[in-house]
Length: 319
Image (cartoon, rainbow, N blue to C red):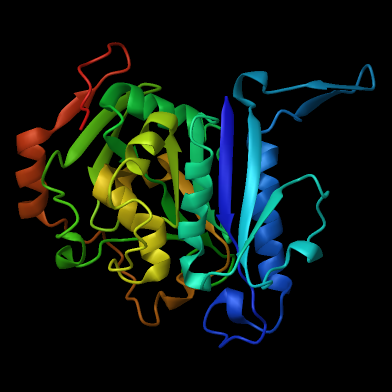
């Protein structure tokens, strides 16, 4: 399988300091970017080996889950750290632009469109996101095989810290319904369920489809690129950064995320503790799970809940 990863990367030490990309000290951002990039090749590229201690040999490993991958990092106006990261020169390709930094996600879309027909998956990540799941594409393929390419499964973003009130928190909980209501109707086919490894996993339509990333198979990328709004650079979903990462896919697909009870089924780490540090400060820590909005959930689930079984190939839901 051939996989294209596009990454929006920006760093300006003279910035406001509000975001990690605008702070004076580049070390934290450099670590985030290096970790992001290294994980992609470690998890999905073909150079994976197992050491045979008895023979003093290293032999290929994970052949069933290794792929041909290309990484293209999009930057703007020379504000980047690519020359400061300890990676080989052939590790990635650099796509330089002159757009406003917040619009770099759209430049990644431009790159993906120019590569239509060349890859099996087209992926976008912000430069501070780290994957840890070597089975990511197996899970995505399983989900779309049974539910159709009109549905898109997004990972839950999380942060971790050895300090603070809790060691791990998922950071993209529900937004107010009106924020996404004009772009999606989450009551339409609210929940899908799938059985995998003898465990039933629930996938819910989400009031917060933003994950700072997306992973589209070739058919999904082709479908999105054919839409009249593709690359219109609309920034009406929260802001430019969120719109570039999320608005187009939200308009094109029914977006699901693993339900909270099984949030780790598909997840991606957000480097740092920007959101985690808010807990017990601006965000109240509850000892019991907050009640679900039963009216919204029941209306959607009772009408359209669909069991996805791995033993059969049910009729797919194509848009």
